[in-house]
Image (cartoon, rainbow, N blue to C red; front, side):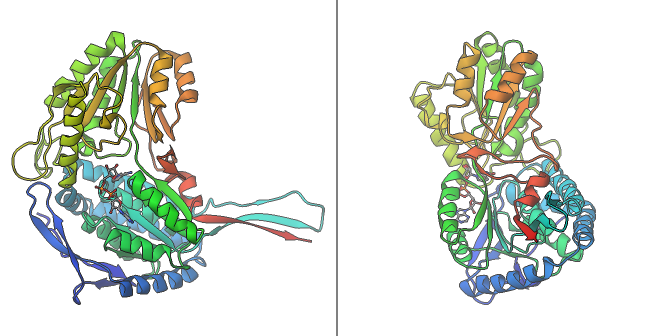
Length: 476
Ligand code: NAD
């Protein structure tokens, strides 16, 4: 049995806690009870972390690809060894079923191994010049990175935020979500135990706005990487602008799913229903707005309602549970508001719609249909287990609805028509488009959105290049 660990920050390799610092109660979403107290950084802690990150960058920028790859590969091995503990801790603090948390561990393992390889592939190029002259384009690590990771993938988000700067030769200060700190510390510890110099990666926690304002005001920070809501993302981009800090922003989505009447509807249901309940819908690429052609609308809606109603909801540590509680008390509250507003505007509630029990943050998987487009939930990211299903007539109307919102993260399409598949790939405005699949990620695949879903990519070669600047050296 894994116990929930005591909590600290990691600054210059030291476990920092106590000393009269403010604390935050980390809560078990199954019961609402406190798991542990998390120490929060004061200004002196952040200044110390900045100073150390500066040293760390000076050191790590000189590292060889072999050294960086060895750390990433070593950390991947340690994560496999520690997978059970890491996954159980993530479940305790975030709520998702432990099997889902294990997938997160393995996503990190895959990413670290891929980035280990990328360390050797950060090629530049030589330009064509007359004999005797030379012009070389090269990529150099950008500098210390301030990285902010949210609570919904307690292991995967920190893995992305740490892996890319480390592969690029940067140092990084990670502020992961205060709601799920032990998972982030577990990932960082694997890197440190694999030989990462202690100055290169550190973890702080705090009052989010205090930490981001302080770090982004420092001339030491050269890059901001943020995953979270669009509202907070816009605020951080404004802060970053003052020091012209480069940004990678992975923000909200409102995943459209287009189901055409020539689709394999059973396959779409078999993919979309567990996709909707994955992490209780608290996923930026969650399938959300189901845009269904009228001939298959009823079949799809009823199939989705039946499947979601049959989902086994419970404590993610227990065998067979398919969906855990929501991660924090803000989420069930938001679900209730979205549903009341939609029903008030005339939407049908096909299944779910209520909290489960009177302990913790459980909410029923829910299907709403025939929802007016001015309902809040049709315009704001629900970030919960709500499937929104509306009927449409033509391909043009379906594409127009898919592109109606300023979000453009993941979009999914189900059709057997090859020509239509090609048209959808061209027409849908999103960073990631799935055709007859919801698998839109992978260590080698860039992950990111357009418009209000953010800019820049994580994962893939693009994830490492986002932590590098381009320099061209011309020699006469
Ligand atoms: P929120 O918008 O306050 O916080 C989102 C994340 O940003 C949290 O991890 C939080 O710690 C961090 N944050 C907030 N203010 C910050 C600041 N000034 N500086 C640095 N970090 C800051 O709200 P929330 O209740 O935690 O989440 C609500 C919404 O956030 C969801 O509805 C969803 O739209 C979005 N969200 C998106 C993702 C994603 O993967 N893109 C993940 C988590 C939350």
